[in-house]
Image 1 (cartoon, one colour):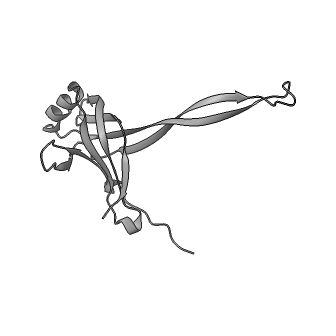
Image 2 (tube, helix red, strand yellow):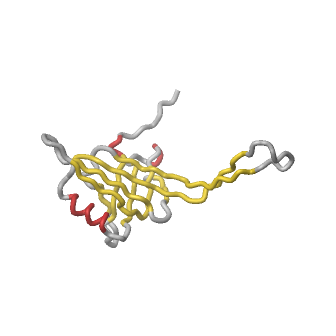
Image 3 (cartoon, rainbow, N blue to C red):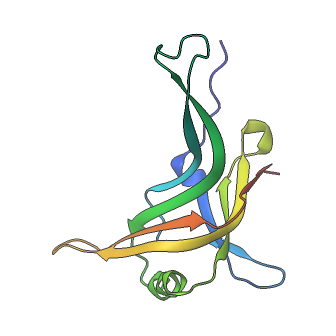
Length: 149
C-alpha cells in the first residue's frame, strides 16, 4: 500500500505580483488561515431528441464553453495589508497572481498563474477579538498550470 502524498494547508500560497520588471510575487500575511483555489467550467446544455422516437425522454448533452478560476483567502488581519487590498479591489486593472501548492513537482506541487480582479475585500471584528480579513479574486483570461520546480 502506498500512502498518499499530502501538503499542509499552509503550503497553499496565494502570491500577488507587484507589477515590477521582473515581477516579484508575495503571499500577503493576512491570508493566514483559510485559502482556496477553484476552477469552474461553464457549460451549455442541449436537449437531444431520439430521431426514431421523438416521444422518448431526451437526454441532455453538455458542452464546456468557458473556464473561470476563483481564489479566496482569509485570516487574522495584518493591518498593513488593508491599503493594498483596498487599492486592488478599487482598481479596474488586474494583478498577476500565482497560486502555489508549495511542494516539489514530483510530489504534486503546482503553480496556477493568471491575471485576477479582486472582487471582494472584507474586514470584520468582534469585541474581544482580533480584526478578521477575507478576500476573493476572479480570473480575467487564461490561467495556466505548471509543475512546481
